[in-house]
Image 1: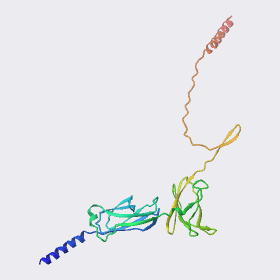
Image 2 (image 1 turned 180 degrees about the vertical axis):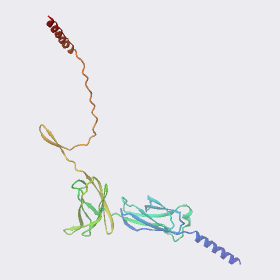
Image 3 (image 1 turned 180 degrees about the horizontal axis):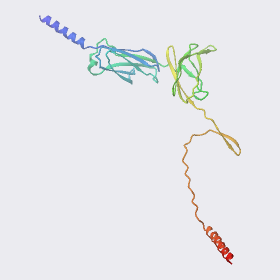
Image 4 (image 1 turned 45 degrees about the vertical axis):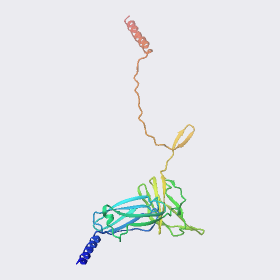
Length: 275
């Protein structure tokens, strides 16, 4: 009887332990070009309403946190998060899922809560040969080459100050005289001054980006002088109000004698007529 009681007790403990263990699994690409978004997919048996923090950080002897996104588990028990990698250096990184509260101690051994990701920096493959600063109406010319791209083409996506300016679309690349690099040239007619962000990628993924500055055309204004016609570039100024004063005439000392002489002549003429 004691053996049966012990077995029953162990079974109950095992059942309770299994019931209180939760599975949490995350997955993401293990290799990714720098600048490409890092998608993280997850699934769990945690009850709806449970919050899990997804932490993106560098991986190594010293771990530096880059970003944290809290996720509240819904009824379907699935979740998705995207981390940005633009501006990061190539190297090893990790994504970790950390349940809040005492759920951390209730994870089952089947859970996968850490994924290690290698970010590959390909930005040194991108070479721009057209001017970074351009002026309307000649803007926007994007020329350059991708190292060892040959004739495979490159995908270009350009975002301007008012939104989409081009693409994303593949443009052709061509090798020159046996050179394995892929040269490209794309003219995009733009009318708005500002910054234009050109992003490049290929079948492997994100390569890099370049920001072009576009300025509006300034038309010189002719100025006629005694020596000829000159041209100058107008500088915007803020007009200032001009204050004017109304001159009120006041009598002067010279006015009094003149008035007296005129009056005297008038009286003399009057007496002469009476005679």
